[in-house]
Image 1: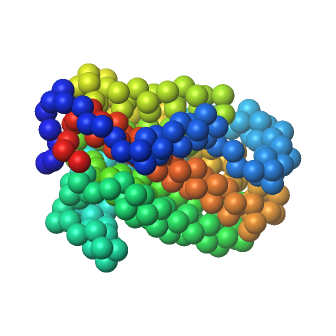
Image 2 (image 1 turned 90 degrees about the vertical axis):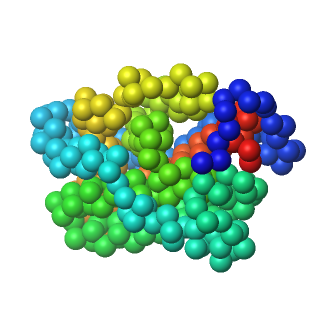
Length: 286
């Protein structure tokens, strides 16, 4: 590992790195502005989404979420093969960034890591869109099968983006950080500010050494249930309601695209922020 001792001495960030932190804070102030077309679609389907929220009982979400909750309880045993760490290292090498292990990215200029992370994001967003087109053309009932696919795709993407900045996700705090990104993008608009603040708080607690297993919310059994429920509710609101109106081939793919795009952007911004703040604190020698 290339981390130093906490408090070993702060590091002065470069002008470009400080500029990136300012860019992240600008995004942080208005993180999910999807554009006029998306806003119009959300407005059109708003009443339908609220109706669906009222008529579907919580126990229905609990029943469907059980298999996915099982996946999350095994999150800590996810292998490097699932994330594709070796492939990421090879991809970086082909671009001229030679490292032996993921941790080597901690020594690299963040500009190179950003390019690597963006390429991974774009590939996954494209895949989510194409998958949404295919399942949306079949219809609303079939689109429920999308949920495990979208879940797995986004989880893998978050871990891959984190790996681009040197995070292997083999610790409780790294896994908590990854799942919190899901909470941000799966939460209703009114809850997003609180979820975003928790992202900031997690970074600060990692740096200060205040985070412990007892502070973990999402890796607990109750936290897992809450997280899965949020994701299911998002899926029903943004995907199934559109498919039921025989617009799935266009709007269903749009929902998959927007969710994956938002997840990718959230992961990209917060891993960059964590990388730079940890570097500035002297946690590693980068």
